[in-house]
Length: 140
Ligand SMILES: CC(C)(COP(=O)(O)OP(=O)(O)OC[C@H]1O[C@@H](n2cnc3c(N)ncnc32)[C@H](O)[C@@H]1OP(=O)(O)O)[C@@H](O)C(=O)NCCC(=O)NCCSC(=O)c1ccc(O)cc1
Image 1 (cartoon, rainbow, N blue to C red):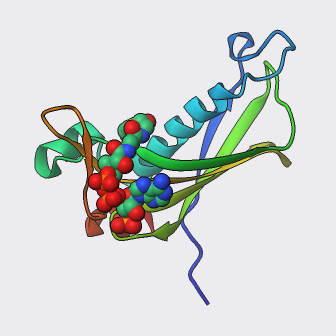
Image 2 (image 1 turned 120 degrees about the vertical axis):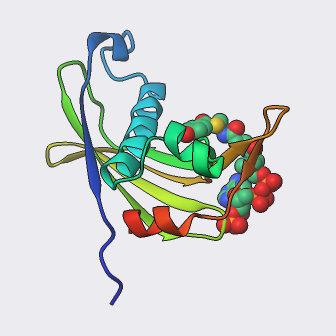
């Protein structure tokens, strides 16, 4: 039986400015919170900030290469949301990161991404590193 994946929860409060004229969260804001929840996952797992990691490995961050989201219920200002994050799959030069956004026990939206550990070339383009074993071990 596979061992359960480490899950880290990122919490936030929805503000009025996060919402559209209908008073519900404007969908791009979920992706901003998901990116914050992604970075928080690594920090809570013990991975130093990317600016530190970059000095020894060249890894600048975790660029996204694929995403899919499903929106089940609306959220509005004043709501306290929780985003549960885990990595269900590590690949050679990429990994899958899964997010479950909820308001207490009520599922709000969910998202699954593929990300890489990215370095930047002189021209600003990204390149992908092999998944660092040290980071994988901290996050499994
Ligand atoms: C990521 C890339 C450098 C990969 O370039 P390539 O030279 O083609 O490398 P590869 O083909 O070897 O792909 C690298 C890996 O990514 C995987 N990959 C690449 N594209 C995909 C897609 N679409 N789906 C799944 N997997 C993918 C590929 O399979 C390789 O993984 P493995 O299978 O495990 O070997 C290039 O596709 C790229 O630059 N894409 C644009 C990335 C981008 O601009 N994303 C949005 C902005 S960055 C961003 O939002 C961000 C957020 C948070 C941060 O900390 C940093 C940046």
